[in-house]
Image (cartoon, rainbow, N blue to C red; front, top):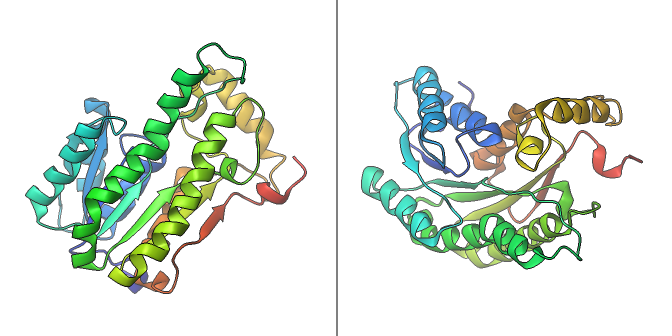
Length: 262
């Protein structure tokens, strides 16, 4: 086990970890010795991720499973309280839960969609961070927020999502300044397209989703869209001691897409 990926005795909380990037990240942290806390809205999916984590954990550690919806303040508080109650500490907070939505500014339900996106992508991060600071200060821990290249460039009919991620990026930079003196690092990762069920959640069929990813494969400079492990690897690096001099940055993991003429 390399020094950079030794998370033995670390307690890691990952939101949105019942699938996609969050699930793979939980398994990777478990693989390198961490006690992970996983959370999402689907109990069956959480249970499956928990089994995968326990299977690769060097000590067979079973994750704490917390069924929760981070768009609800009461669930955020229960999530932190459950973590501290179980393990008496928190070392790493990964704010990964996210919600995407397509909308035009003339959409009659634009304000409802605005509330939904902001509650998950931004409000939950603000509140979970607020609740975590006292615990992370004790462990000199760190926070990693999962944003998107959509926070760095505009996309058609995705202004609500783009706004939420742009705000998350600035929140990260401001919090890095505020929490640095407490010994807490705060960074944000901006992925481009990653092959998950994200497109299906925002309304595409599985076939349409696959077709879209395949179409993008050829356009990305590295010749493919991302996989969840690509982002998990970036998360583990930023969470590790090897990144101890890194805080307040946008870590763009996008296969070169941001600067490519797509």
